[in-house]
Length: 387
Image (cartoon, rainbow, N blue to C red):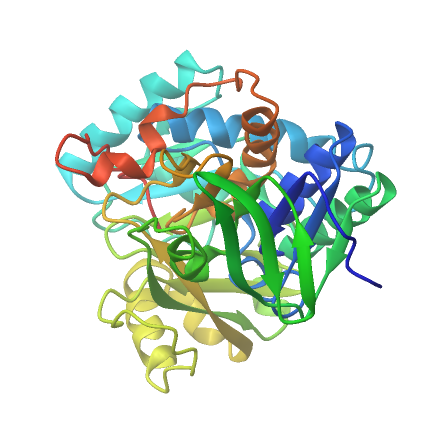
């Protein structure tokens, strides 16, 4: 497919953010070209655990998660694609009094946004997540309408929908320069050719600082490697497990697990990983994972690991996204730095990027997510309910 001479908007990045933006813009009648340096969903999106939730401590993240859940629930109709959405809930297991207080406050915020959420006892938690070992637990936070789906399917669904509305999507095409005239964008150069445009949306994830640097914008996004695993199929010894269990997270250690096909998907955030783009699997990961499982889900130790993979978190200093328009170059938008909760917010972010481009009011005020908050005059708003 030949690159068109011009479009209204160029999107950089073919993960959930880029394809969601492409779909929502194209659906609104905007001409779009999306460029992905590799394949669709080949960056962080396809490496995600697939969790979707509104269980956050920050009001913006609650609203973004709740709206995305609404859009995912209707995904089979719009854009019209099967994403294997399951909604058995999210369960955070809490061992520290301070964490219990944090989630009690979060629960009140959830209710303000219409999110079903409650604090439950360890006994009740074990009844809905039977692998959970409750020793040392004080309480748990449960949001029953959260869940998980297939990240690649969401990306392919948005890409398919965008194409139906006329969007041009190019893979194996690297953006190498953004040209400007004064404060205005004039063109984007790729390794396959140039395209005229007056607007760019940077959805390049862990690679977004490189794209932003083309227009002189510094984005505080740092890549960190994360790893997860899928167990061998569950045998007769696990016949007591229900077919659907919540995404369960031991909050103090970040160990998490949920049903995935005929096995269990599990992982944790290894805080000892140095920053960088290295994706080699850690030979000690199974040992580290086993040590955490022995404490909070010892039955997992009876399962062998069938497969696994690594991916990148795109992390900001306060674990909140960077979302907005660059003040010094007109029509340069960015959506990045989601710090591990980007996949689940992608549907809502696509709507917001559409509205920002069309100069309409988004459904929620996102000014607090501007990259300018990291200047001396900015105000940080750390997200605490992270994995």
